[in-house]
Length: 250
Image (cartoon, rainbow, N blue to C red; front, side):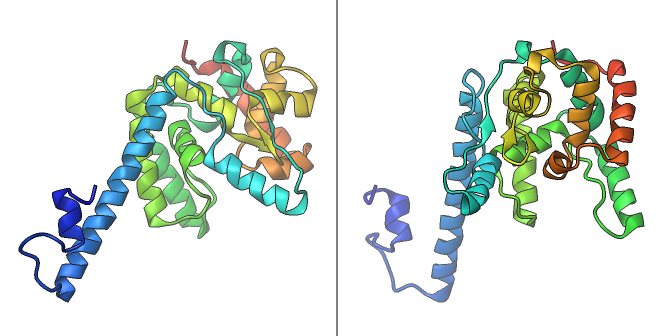
């Protein structure tokens, strides 16, 4: 490694090396930063390629939540169990798409109309009340990114979303999404959610149960503790009315 041209240049150990100026240090710092960023993108790319055939065992968000939960209960574990796409209720697939991303099958990762509407709504309210993120964007955040809102995180989310859309099918994206998203305090994925709330499997969820689970996605820990709020009841009814109008990946 130390014999490569880049390494020798970076360490200023090449044959024509001169004492480094401030500009030289800046150039090397920028080169090192770009190299680290590119290696990180390759690392993400390889993970997504692996997930074409193999299931992720965890996610960045799951690991963050487990760490927080274990601060109070060191022996705590997440409620999580992977279940294949065909064993997830068609009602839940429809409800989640109707609730989170009605244009899921049509867009290539970004719903620009939805983003515009969310921006206008947030501008009117003077605070963030709507996101406009697609299922692919949400999956990108869940799998790889921290919960901190930074310009770097948003830019990285765009890159990961594009990778997901180019490498994985819509069916695979939805399958992974339904298996890794948070559905309560320490509850992750459709199977764990179905058992936590309804004592049943993800395959046996009814239309009403699926609609309520979909309604909980934006604020799952709150609704875990407040399962029958007026807003949640209204949102559930709205999703249930819409869910039969959406198509799901076959």
